[in-house]
Amino acid sequence: MAIVSQVIGIDIGSVGAKGVLFDGSIAASAIVPTGWDMKETSRSLLSSLAGGKDVTALPLVATGYGRNAVEGARRTMTEITCHARGVRFLHGEARTVLDIGGQDSKVIGLDRSGKVVDFAMNDRCAAGTGRFLQMMAHRLDYSLDDVKALSCDGEVQPLTSMCAVFAETEVVAHIARGVPREALLRGILRAIAARAAAMVTKTGLTEPLFFSGGLSRIGSLATLIGRELKTEVAVHGRSPLAGAIGAALIAWEER
Amino acid sequence: MGPIAAIVDEVRRHRDDGILQIKEAHEKGIPIVGTYCGYMPWEIIDAAGAIAVSLCAKSDEAIPAAEEHLPRNLCPLVKSSYGHALRGSCPYFHFCDLIVAETTCDGKKKMYELLDRIKPVHLVQIPQRQDRPEDLALMKSEFNRVCRRLETLTGRPVTDEALAASVALRNRERRGLRALWDLSRRDNPPLTGWEVQEITDYIQYHFDKKQALVWLEGVTETLRQTEPERDLSAKPRVLVTGCPIGGVMKTLKTLEESGALVVCFENCGGQKEPLKAVDEAKDVMGALAEKYLTIGCSVMSPNPHRMEALERLIDEYDVDGVVEIVLTACHTYAIESHSIRERVQSLGKRYLAVGTDYSPGDREQLATRMGAFVEML
Ligand code: SF4
Ligand code: SF4
Image 1 (tube, rainbow over the protein chains, first blue to last red):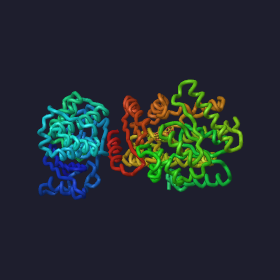
Image 2: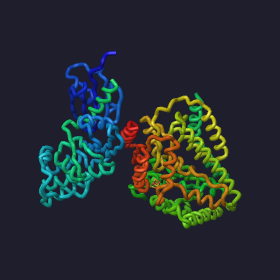
Image 3: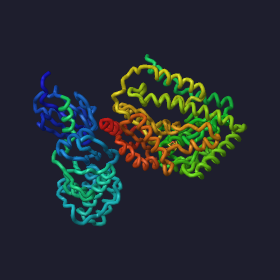
Image 4: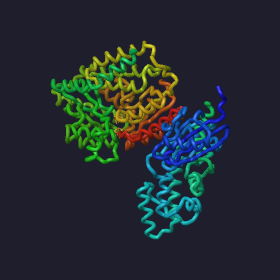
């Protein structure tokens, strides 16, 4: 048998699809939006990873919500397992993972060796997810860069509802009353942080805590979560790729 | 077809026999008594000369009808049961002469007030504690009231002799079911959890008890002596606990499709009621009250019997992980799941709580949770 020197991990999430070409380290990576046709999404992901070469023979493990739509996958694994593996690749000591993505959020508990021992997921309502923040920021006429640039210290207008629909009504009412936009945005971020912290506490926090997913790019949110939980919060620029990295690691081991 | 497949096939072909049996019994003038809960004494209904039938509804199609009277944010089991009664779409309910219901959870208890407008309901006051003399005294006096109520329905007295005979029969069923379930204690069980549920359901909806038990005992013996056609020994072994799963069989299906083998059901429909038999050496009404009072349901506070049963079953069935099914808006099981999680994890076993309802909309989410859980084992 030929020695396999490269493998692929693919993570089809509900918002974005990610792929990693792995050869012992990350040789290439790609992120594309998840379209209507997940088969098509995975094909375009593969071709951007391949960079013109033929990768169809490489071992491939698929994960994420669209994992069963990926053609040619040797096996599929859930995003919980793959995400955990990927996080440990990025941060070798992580024991608790908080992941907030576009549509869902999850907490994963790991043992010393990195094995998943517990997890909790919210994938049924938008409350506290990237989607929620996007809706609220849009109401306030803020871009993602504006949100990232916000300092978490300053005037805060607390938000009482975390239901995306009610929260939007509340935000509109505050705008009408003339509450400053920054104060509202801080209130929104605090509400997301409080919810995330509660989810972590419920599953059980073992340090160190690693924060991943799209929302981990917002520094002030990571700070607020750390304050709520009274702990350091580790983040990593490549954490959106964690699921795909984990899938690739599994393919690598089984190659 | 091998013997195991043949048994499962036979059960599938006879799935609806129970409805015909109830219809025939009704036509012969035998009173039919509906129940909704494990705390209801089957023996008293049987000894009175009536047929007891469990009415807990399992489908979501009657829920919209129920929501015309009931709040949306209510347990689907309660809504579905009421909806079927309201629409007349449950054949078992249709043939019932009386409902013997109970004060367990708030949802059911208040739903029964409305149900009473459709069919006569006799409400049994179940104590909320199990350990004091007055709890047992209440259970006993309530069971006596059930006897009197049934006597007026059937026109014949509930004698101690008849009760003793019913107790013996029901104990035989408890032993029979547990012997079948015990086959899953093996390293390579003959049946999947899904198949165990099918056979169990068949027995519980077969109203010629003696005939059903002869069949069950024969089948268990066959399974005991047959070399299994499949090798299930490498699968992670899971115990299911929590709310009744009759209406959310999708959870069991997804769990086993994800690679687990369910070797034990602690919930209602599984071990919860049959785990302990009625003591045949004692005064029969006292023994009945005592047995039923010790059922470990989350409506009790405190609820030590569930913890004890869980610990015992986790050990006996050599379980790797526990999955708790919590129906939407079932507060008692949802709250208790916190202590169950702690206890299960303290035993070094993995634990997953899954919230769900009767609608098919959460298949993907279930597949991810169950799949991740199985990958964890
Ligand atoms: S779970 Fe509790 S309330 Fe529900 S049927 Fe069983 S014993 Fe009765
Ligand atoms: S599942 Fe819970 S809420 Fe539903 S009937 Fe049973 S005890 Fe009541």
